[in-house]
Length: 252
Image 1 (cartoon, rainbow, N blue to C red):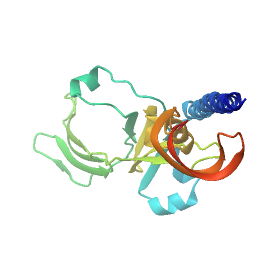
Image 2: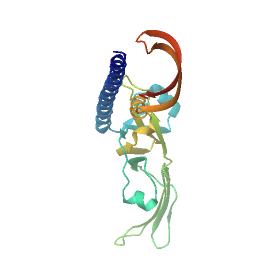
Image 3: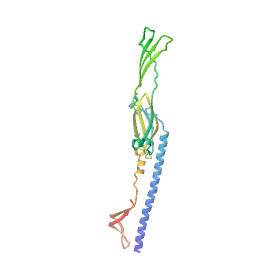
Image 4: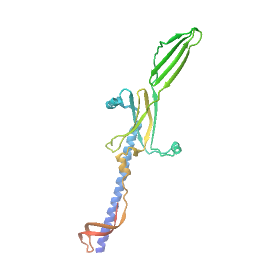
């Protein structure tokens, strides 16, 4: 009878541990599925996003930038990165990939030159110096008498484009996902358009993803020495509170 009671208790304990393990795995899989769906929804929003001028909608940003700068922004798709031929050639592991195009405003000016001279051979000459950021233009024009053709020598210099890139992560939303963005700061005369933007999800370390990745695996383990205090079942078949010492198994 006593042996039967011990076997019943042991069987009940093992059944309880197995039930807990199965339920934990089911809950873990469901949590991973929900997290993947939430991240997928955030990536759909990022895919549909387009480049925008932040200063047009954020007065605080406009005050910081002033009249000389502009800032372009777009959401980033957060997805696992896979190495390509360029990564292999560089011998590196890619964590993010950003594509953009920059252009400058066109030049449109009407310029008159006060420095007009006429030589003995009836050739009128003029010098033009134009500065319209980012262009610096110097032109020499010679206009002879007909039927000769006019001639112009022009030198155009284009300023370099100072371009600052910032990768940012928002605060977590109600689902625990942090939106990723890339911002480009340029002079007013330059325009940036973002193409495909993507980066590894762990760069923004969303709490929802961290819980899914860092969830500890539960597994049975034997401990040769266990010290504890609690209700115990003795050899006579009765329960009593006691301090115990011995070996045992855990489900963690």
